[in-house]
Image (cartoon, rainbow, N blue to C red):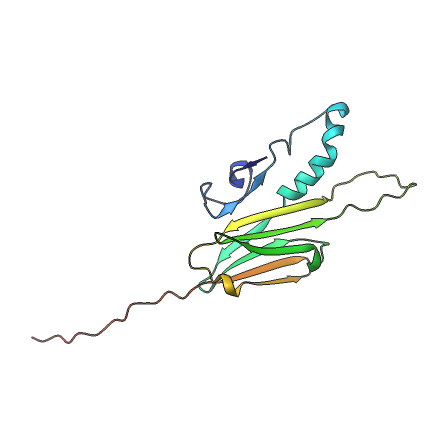
Amino acid sequence: MSLIPSTLFGGRRSNIFDPFSLDIWDPFQDFPFTSTAISAPRSEFATETTAFANTRIDWKETPEAHVFKADLPGLKKEEVKVELEEGRVLQISGERSKEREEKNDKWHRVERSSGKFLRRFRLPENAKLDQVKANMENGVLTVTVPKEEVKKPDVKAVEITG
């Protein structure tokens, strides 16, 4: 796996050189393995890697804060971690467990991903790291990072004489 910008391979970010987003990319994610001999050994790894790499997160900046939203359907807040690492890095991670297989079950299709996911974002200098808040509601994680207020220079009126 490599650390590369996600827009290079189908992400939504407009600037591939965005220094604030660190995406994990699986170079074999969409590679068409036709032989079962080739695909079988990597199937468990591929499912886990896909879950890891495909957690989509939106990041918007408002005048007051940086807001991150992640769709995490089926996860409880106890299964998700939001951490601040050294160097102003926001890390969002978690794990979706595989569904337990019963002996008599016959699976026809498995499309929901399971496994671990991890996303990291380098926060800008104006982020108030001591006031970060996270909320999980209806499968959507919202992380709000307030921004420092930009102080406008005092403007003093000057009397015009003439």
